[in-house]
Length: 258
Length: 325
Image (cartoon, rainbow over all chains, first blue to last red; front, top):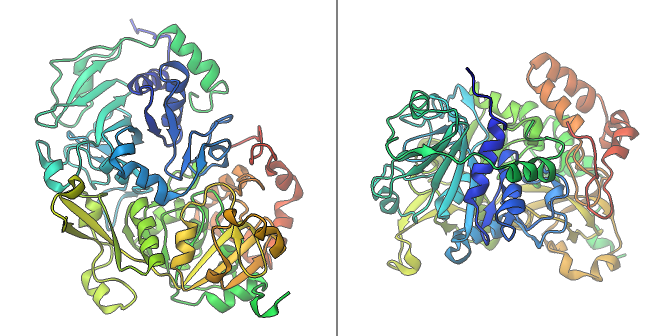
């Protein structure tokens, strides 16, 4: 019998990501579900988190959901509207960068949490070309924590990226440090099946939580590389309070939740 | 009025004068905000080709220029058109079909490259991109770089921190300066000399302008010098950087201008749908670009209803509760 959950995959993903955000965090947000996760955190568990856009707006009052990081909706009632050179300096600066948590999406991710947002196929003559790094490579280079939002599919969880756009743990172990990067990069992966993190010693992705109704076996079937699932436990599903705030306060028109 | 400093000319004339076949250009704004669209459409109408475009996160303007075959070389961090096209459609097609030469950077790298250009430096350093393919995959070959004096010999260079481990960094990435032949931006207010006041986010417009050999400013409002001089703190671009000023109301349409109008999501969607099919795209271009003589005529066929729908609310700076596709 099919187990019908009282929430959608998008809703559980948003709540799982929101739970990663702490009070005082500066949340580097994109659009869509990442924006919603930032808003959910602010409304549920981290009221003193700050939403921050690479375009330079800090602590915007989002009366309406923005559709782009250059949407005029992010410029209203911000603490400051600045510019790209300022916003990335804020992330590169370890004093402020330390507080930044980024939410990113990608076409591909590998076992070390490196991301591809550039292309499928050969870089010079790709089968599919995507938008490119934008600020993704920058923030993944600079800040200690990044959440990657992914659909859990074998073609997205790959052994080898077609293009390494944004750094995770690079080749694992101390390779990030050897390349000259600070500790950081993608630290947690939130998918429609579960939550993955990275081993502190070898840098490889492991399964931390699987959602109710999903098994570690199913996750492995949809992952293109081997992954440790031995430590995995079932995630606490979204609470009624979390769902109520998400649905009624964050996206009442279901522009993103669908 | 001191006429020697009067830089106001019609847009058509400014484009003819400053944008040439083979020019290295940059355009202001970010994805669906404050693109100098009137200027972009005028470049397309004048059939200026073989442009080398420098872009951080460009969107609507970039995709129209690529769609019209104006761009032959592109240095870019991101090409997206908001919800209508998360990846710019003509950009993706041009890359997939090998129709343009392109090279990828990050947004910070491109912003710093403009900043280096604005400061008269050959490069600036950053900690971004170490270990990534942005460092290893060069879109322009070494031989092409050497043969073209307007393209720097190396894409990016990694250097050991010359100050030892000062601030904890072991290495830095050096990003080379950009000094475009021409930069075009669209702003809320400018005066006849070219002093500009930008409201809302300035993206990388200021660095782009200050790095550029020539600058065209298009503006919503051409205001008296006295008005801007009352709040000099808001004028991040003084007139000394500007070559030409063109008064073009709704000059960023269909992209947004904070405090003036929103993006037209219906138009952007129509553009995205047309961009997926060459015949449809040609029809679209014939109607909205080649079929009109200037931006005013373009806005006439767009229609007053759309212009009213996107009008910004004075409190928020955008169109409140606008139906967005």
